[in-house]
Length: 247
Length: 368
View 1 (spheres, each protein chain N blue to C red):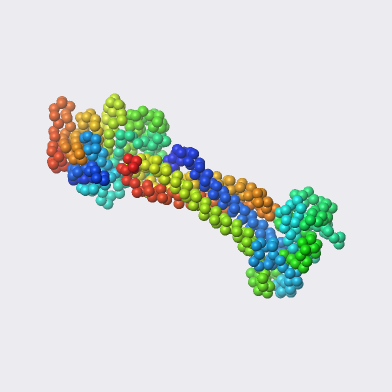
View 2 (cartoon, each protein chain N blue to C red):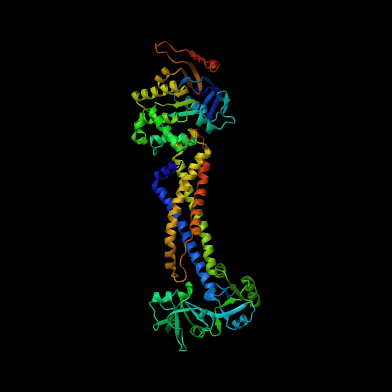
């Protein structure tokens, strides 16, 4: 599977009188893992929502594989076939089992019941929860719930995984395991991944780290290498003009 | 999706039960009244064909066919009609039989086809002795009457000469006495309630009925059960009451379902936003909401059907008309009750479902 190419061109978004994003441009190569960081209210989650087709930009364009996302495309279908979402508050349906939660996107895709079930169990096995398949969220730990959410995000084999603070509600050990899972899946499946986080550990694992401040990209560069040398940082004006990962 | 609908309804069991109960009451009322009307229709069919007649002639524009008053003199004129082979006068006495207020006492000409068609199963026909009566086998069984016993009719004790079977519910649940005795007891000398008519073979009932109504202004002929129901203001009133109750049930049910589903949406915005986020189309999410509305309505309608069938009997007993009417539950009557239930679900779910389609996933996820 090839990851999706994401291009954000001069995107702006305001909620009432509050400007969440201003002239943001970003290019993400297929299979690239990007960490998006920045202080609270800097527009990280809004940027993710625009890329995922959850909200329409006021100005600018989001292009997925070269095609504008918000013009003439069936957004529900795009979300179903292209994107997988993981949220901080896992957003599992409390009355459904882990398996049934993973099946939810597959119901949206119109998959047959038996196929759905098999696929959900396969995904839960992949995230190490095959034995907890029939447990409801209340019977699972925080880390297990987030792993169910990851399995659900992968249900429709997305080419783009968007994770909004996936470890925000987890302790450090559990966060580490969830991140291991996300990056391992990215490596194995080849999908493009954008992760919004305050967690510096994600920046260290990602191919690039984009920092947003006040709705604008403050920096965009390769993440800090393991040897501790400073990361390569580019000016915001250069964003989207070149592929910095060499992919 | 069905499993999600069921799960969601079970999530708030009290609310689901109360909403369904509200719908059940409406549907039960409809089913009970439909069964009651159907029973009336079947009873009316018996009334129309008393004694094996083809049609009955009644006074026009009366509140109920039993309230009709005709002059006895018209029987002779009717018999002269080429289309009529036999005509016999009947005087119907309602609430006249002691101990069984629902039974009808028929004053009939002993020489007419109505009296002659009665099959005597015990005792014999009344003789020349005055003050005798025949009782139907149903009435005899109910009041434990045998030939020689006494039966109070219109305040007078009459001797039971025999027990008959006619095969018509009304007749078998009632009693027959001579027309003269009936006129004497009711103080209606020279009058009758109706004339039972047999037509010549090959005669069109409709044509004969039109001719009779033309030749005898102020009369109406009844040859079909529906005509009997339409002729009676009481039956018309019941039909209109059913319509009013159907409309009220739908309005109340729709408000209930709309309220329930609107509350569910308000509580579950994040969940519905999640469904959109994972790729459910707006139509599919709306279908889920609509499905929940229909499901709760069908549960209510199912309970309503059950209660309605039982309630039909209770209604008849409460009204004290079990002798006239036996509620008759038909598949179509149940189907109409179910249709009302589904209609409530669909109409009640439309607005909440539409609202869901207007939500953007991000705002829904934020629960705003």
